[in-house]
Image 1 (cartoon, rainbow, N blue to C red):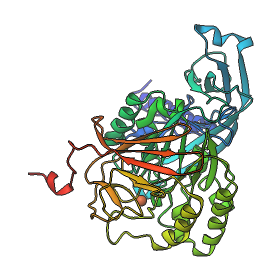
Image 2 (tube, rainbow, N blue to C red):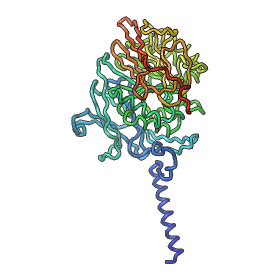
Image 3 (tube, helix red, strand yellow):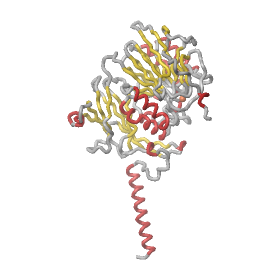
Image 4 (cartoon, rainbow, N blue to C red):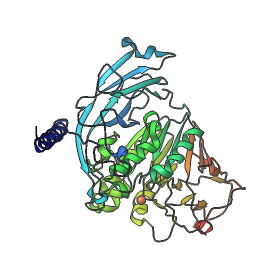
Length: 467
Ligand SMILES: [Fe+2]
């Protein structure tokens, strides 16, 4: 064989291998990582055959069911969830102890060219597990149905709430995570879970990420929460950053990757505007971004809110939405939202309104008028604006505010019993920055006790300028 024949033969083999790889890629319908290692956070962007982005959600019947979503590459076109009661040993794996359900699977492709992200071909899977017993610890795993563990997740624990609606529970409320989510928000959600590992669910008040269609940013959000997302149910309301800033529609990733109640008023806001009951609390997600951007549908969302509140039988009511009814800074006022929603919060005695968007913290009530009182009778709804990510704005002192902060990442642990809501806002150090107790008697009379820590001065952004 001559030298030139050898070279030709070598290239023929190389070309043949590369063609085979391309054919395999097409056949498998997924994106290989080859040549993608220069893409920042590429491991967070591309799916594989093993489940990732696993998240559980509250359903409309949280005592007997929960919802799960996860992602794989498109080789997995049939996916399953297995559920068992938690056991002292590995007996949960015995065939007789576990139940297997087929998931709903949809293929989804997303190419976020605005951020120079590659085409991502994924399969999103979802399942709703019902017929569970209240007050019971279960385990579940998701995967491809194979006998080996390779394409299954680990078993995650989840506990259903007790059937007595007055069973105490707690949840953690986060304002905007939004920016540098892997780098800077991960420690906030982890600290919150360290402080309250028995938390029953987590509530996100919008702007979980910055660019609605960014697979990298969503990957960071799932990475930051890691197994917490898979073991503590979440509910979330969208912010302006979950809406595509070019065409004004909800992020294409919202519905594939989440599985939220579909009981809202309009098709466009199913899974963004919804309600559910947990224990003795009614929780309502109001899609404030949609309300702002689509004036002709405002009445529909307000009428729905009115009907949900009018038929409420729960003792406590929490409304959560992204834009605040009372902003923390001049020039960020949401007048139409306030004029639409506040009459309903007043009329029906909403207890908590949890919000984000302003990248500062403030908490207070409409009747406050800067009186500095510790104990207040019938203050009306308590309004909170919070931020959990690192993007920080400035705010102005306003009469409604009891406590204010700038340049502070916070999470709120909210503990609910039959008669009391205990609200505590913490920094990533686990230091208490703000707190109050709300006591409601059986006639609906409310007493609010402010518990602002005296030894923690107000934090202002101007005090944190780089030298
Ligand atoms: Fe926002």
